[in-house]
Image (cartoon, rainbow, N blue to C red):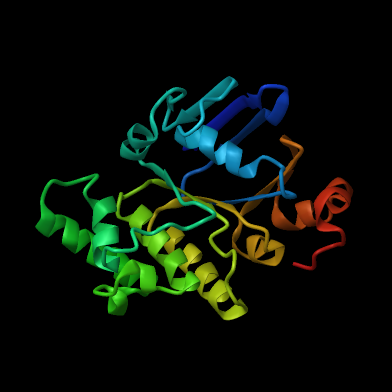
Length: 241
């Protein structure tokens, strides 16, 4: 099977700081890949290198068979890859529906079609009843879902989620896990950054571990959870899967 995304020795430096160093991995279509690591490990920076917000200092990012180094984020999004952010910042004075329509307008000039696409994604994430609310009035759990809906409205092949469960209570986290698993059944490939290790082990086919910007481990959830180097660097104790 041809990889949807490939990273080939990707590094990102800021002056003398190595945020990412020689990171290589591939992502298969219709898979869920977890990306974990301590704070400051370089996870979000890596997402930014993949999606065009930062140019890699060296190495290659290949998406659907083409090298995308140097592409702008909007160009990467048009190719079919989109990300969410740790800190959600909805357009607070627009309605929930209008926020998602902004994403849908990437693919169509028709407001009628954009509205239909947006409504579809709001149903998918369970926010259709909040469609007419101002986005700024949503609690954090629903803001996270809005962020996902807006990303989905761009009709991605690959969705990168950055701590989408951050700040959620256990019930909300379980709902987000169910949503992630549902998205895979729709044919969407996902890479998920998350600090909730049990959640990431539950949803992922494969887990990558970054530590000090370098890839420390890459394998099945149980294999990674039992890796002594991972336990020492990040988990602190064995995680029962």
